[in-house]
Image (cartoon, rainbow, N blue to C red; front, side):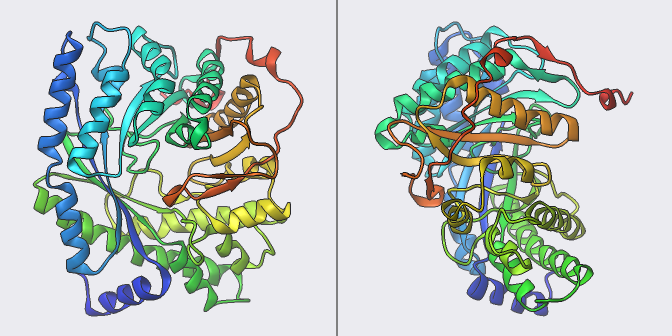
Length: 452
């Protein structure tokens, strides 16, 4: 039960510190929609999605009104299309992306994720077809999100896929150049992707999941910042305890919403993802938390340590508040979605190399970073390989959502709109890694992967 004191504290967090439920995401399995005919497959997936999710937005809006808690997004994740559509006889999965987009629009959700392939150890013909379909698919749809998992700590890194994804990202950027290469903001390359992630653009419904589940993502960087203002100048033990207690309270809010959504939709509850995901609004920033900790700007010496503290204690507090904390729980550091991070880039305090170091201890990786549109595909592949190596060796999820903005260079600004915000174009190391990327093959798993 939620106590009266918790209700009062929650009201204060909502009113003063921008607490919100960032997303209610319904995961839907498409495995039983399989058909050799692509048109019948599209018909099957449209019918299943619109049947299961027909009341998702209505229930989300009702919960928002009843509890007074903002629920920013309602979303859907589906079985990776490269798996669900593997039996189809077709030369493109673009029609599937269009069907997903139409279903998302008809039920009213913000995004639908799962135009995805899992190729960490190698690719099937369906995986390759999915990957080749991504640029066109993201250029002709509005709400579809795509992801490709190119490595795991258990299997190593598929460097053939790493090389191809650099080319795919650049092609997607070119096809959506009229809107600052926005298509790349809906495409993530993962190492160690998780099956129950409610956050876009990387969400998909894992094959080990139930037929349909409700996953809830809760955020609250503003709440954490406000809490830390009350312990300004205190020691690190006090700081850590404050973050843990705050994360516990935030997660309790998510637990309440998740249970109610599950009951009203008659869909099993999956997980709570407590991730401090910022927005472009002032007061809702991870970078502001760093400043409250004592750093002049995100990127200053000590930033990686500050992020490690934040990430670890968010997880510790969240785990105590719910039996099913999952997803990517921790702290996100997307550049374009955090006004403090944007300011740090503009002032020169934050570089791409420092961001890479920070990803060793954050929840995901290089996220929503705009780079010059003239960046070679091999360089993008090299950045993906670096980030995936961090995830593989450290047995954590890492990802790259990078946007080569066609026609723009260093210092210019890319405008994405809404929660995606805007981003200054960041410089990229100009030395070539083409010969390295062109080697191909697979980087073996690290020695500590052998645990059986």
